[in-house]
Image (cartoon, rainbow, N blue to C red; front, side, top):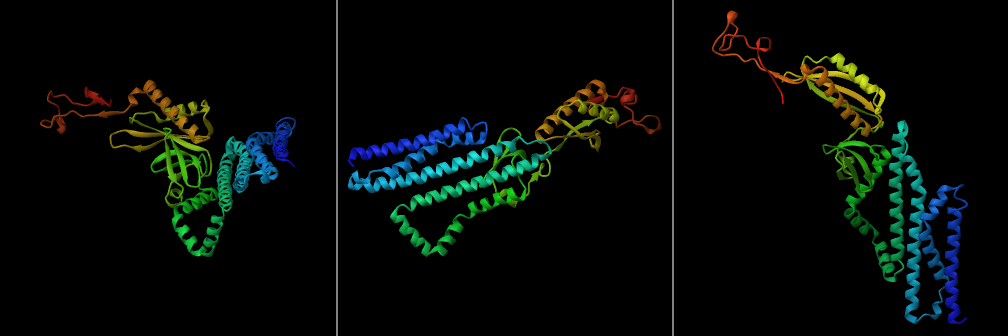
Length: 372
């Protein structure tokens, strides 16, 4: 066979393999789409690495190495071997992500009582996928390195002193390995999941990302608090949605003693019945504390399906009750009473009187100094 035909065979082999991959992709994304929608989506996502793998495999099989220069023969063979490893790794990762993404997307849309179990499964699946991807990449890098003769010799020497090398690597990678095992512990102990509402470092937020090295918490003001995974296994934190996504929110009001609690309670219930964010399960209004400044603390509690709904519901309830008290019972607004008396004189019966001889206080012209 002449050099021309040898190169023609190479070109035909590459073109044929790429054409076969394109035919399979069109079948999965076309006629078979209605029967297996997931297969069509996976075919589109895996098209690029599949084309690359088909091209390098066919080129490696049909390459006319005999017609290459003496120095280029080994370099081209070595380069094609590395390209096959790289394309295979790329295709495996794309297939893994294409097959797991639909399941993760379905778990994201689960609501209601099954939301907690769905978030747990999604967290575990994401961590396992990251671990699998890391293992595949490490194996691929090792395979590429071992295609070099010098690295193979070095590997044999390392294996001969595996005990010492393992000890050194273990000490150097202790923080990384600690975070890795901490991430697995969190995911499979059900202590922390994606979208959990937590209070950590004095900050309230939602778990947005959980990786093998860090946890990203999205705070209420859209900031991100980035913490190492080991922080959640070594130090305490609050998890508001560990057993259920339902959250009970509260709204506190500081009012005067004259506030009509029963009327306020009835108004709260009437407002909640009309509010779309209330889950119609729990509510109550109580006087929770008598404050030293002469006010009482009224707390309204209400439940919602999740933390985001609970936050909005709390704000709406607080605004509604403030407007209700201001319009219907303005005398119950916070106030500070002052008894303006004169220390030098006293009226009949030993009661102190002001300089004008009149009794001070609200009943006799005394002033109510309202708060700003």
